[in-house]
Length: 366
Image (cartoon, rainbow, N blue to C red):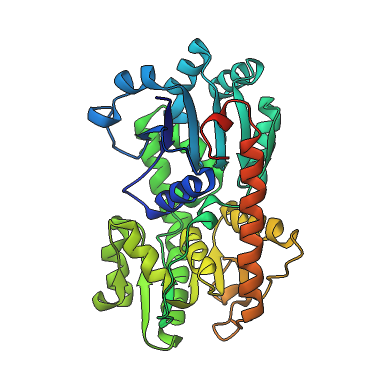
C-alpha cells in the first residue's frame, strides 16, 4: 500500500483544518492510498501516531498541506526526502522570511528535482519558490475555498470575526523573524515590552473599539466568532459573554459560517467559509497576509467572473474605520452564482495540473 505523509497543523486553529479539508477534496485520493497525518501544530510532540521515527520509513510521498509554516518544523522530513529520494509537493502554502539554512536545504531539494509541484497561495510565496529554484510553480486560491459547502437554509447570522491584533506575531514578517530567532532571552523580553508599550497598546484599543462599534450597529441575531481558545476571555470582555462562539470542533465553526448573512472581521478563514456559502465579506487586516484573499479574488476573476460586490479587503490604519462602513455591504446574488462557478473552474484546473504530475498522479483518482 502506498503511503502519503501529509504535514498539516490541526486542532488549535480551525483555519488550518479548513485548508486541509479543501486540499483533501482537491486531491481526491484513490481508495487504496494510506494517508498519514503529521501534525506540526504548536506544542505537539513527535510521539504515538505523530512519531516521525515510525512514519518516515512508511512514507512514499510527502505533501505539505497549506499554511505559512511549511519550512521550519518540516526540516527533518525534507532531509529524509533528500536522503531517500522521496518526491513531494507543496500545495497552497504561504511564506514568511526564511533562514539562510532553510534556503540552502530547499535549494538542494530543488536541484534534486524532488519537488514535483509548488503551488503558492500568495505572491510572496511564489517569489520564494522562484528564488529557491523550484521548477513547476504557480498560484492557487487559498485551498479552504475547495471545502464542500453545507446546504443550509438558515441564513440568519451577522458575524464578527474577531482576533487579537497588534501583537508582534501579527506585525511585519521581518519583525517576527527577528523576534523568533533573537538569541538573548533578556533582550528579547525587553524588546517585547518596548514594542507593546510604544506601538501595540494604542492601536489595539482603537481596533477593538472599532469592532465593538460595528458589533453594536449590527442587526440581531449576531455573533462574534473566535478561532483560538486564547481569544475567548478577551472577546467575552469586549462583546459580552453570550455573544462569543468558539469550538475545538472545526465543523461546528464551519456550520456557523454557513448561516452567515454578512461577515466583517479579521479572520481570513472566517471570510472564506462565509464566501463559499454565498455571504459577502469585509476583511479588515493589519498586515499583508490579507493578500491571500486578494490573490484568490484575482484568480477567480480571471475566469470571467466579477465578484467585487462580495469581497472587500481593507487594511486597518486608525480608528476612523479607514473608509469601512457597516451599511456598505451590498449583496449581489448573481455574484454568488458566479463565485461558485469560478471556484469549480479553479478546482478543476488545479486538479488537472496535479493529475499530470508523474508521481502524484499515482495517488489521485483519474
